[in-house]
Length: 298
Image 1 (cartoon, rainbow, N blue to C red):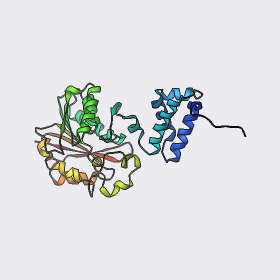
Image 2 (cartoon, rainbow, N blue to C red):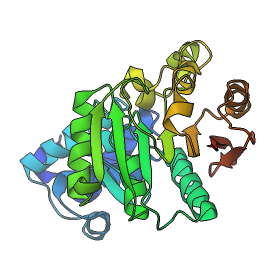
Image 3 (spheres, one colour):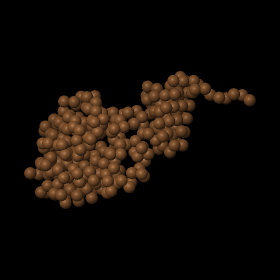
């Protein structure tokens, strides 16, 4: 019988892509083909276009091993962004780590909300003070600083490891001189007043965490997900001191897809919406109310 065994050294780009795509599909990964192309490109230092253009290229044993390691991690449902250590967000790339939340497109709604509010207030050229509570990778604060060249901001997190990632992102984006980082929990260590407070707090009800996709449940920091029994535990903690931090400005909070009304009611019940009761909602690309903004006035 003729031996048809293919050695590792005989694996081609086309064959590796086909095999990786099949492995990811069997593991239940959505978009298996796209993920396979990205993983091959990163492991081999090629563009995705080069992967497709040269299917006959033979991989070295070392290259095949590198590809295999990356694909095995994705089969275990580790997100591609975590395998590569970087996530694209609002047109920029941000390093992430096991200490940080993996930013997702839904959170770009918060950026759009802040920019819309700043434009409406005539603040686009004003030297704004921004506060990002639970900054993680720093993607929210740093994106806003890049979009608002007159602004400066403070990002807080309970994780020193996360703050180190945020600090490195600031340096890479050339924003070090306008960003400060503080190890703090909620608003307990915050002194002074800010024009805009932003936060993507933990808002998943504890009972729902077990049902999250493996990419979230297994790889995002639990402290960045668990919002307590109703998902609003951290919101209560923010609201306890929010009026002392944002006296004359806006607070913009990301919420779960079904939490907008509850968050708005909470803001109103504590008087956090100011004398005008000014509360606005912002929808994500799926049409869900993803952010709640409240304006405070002296």
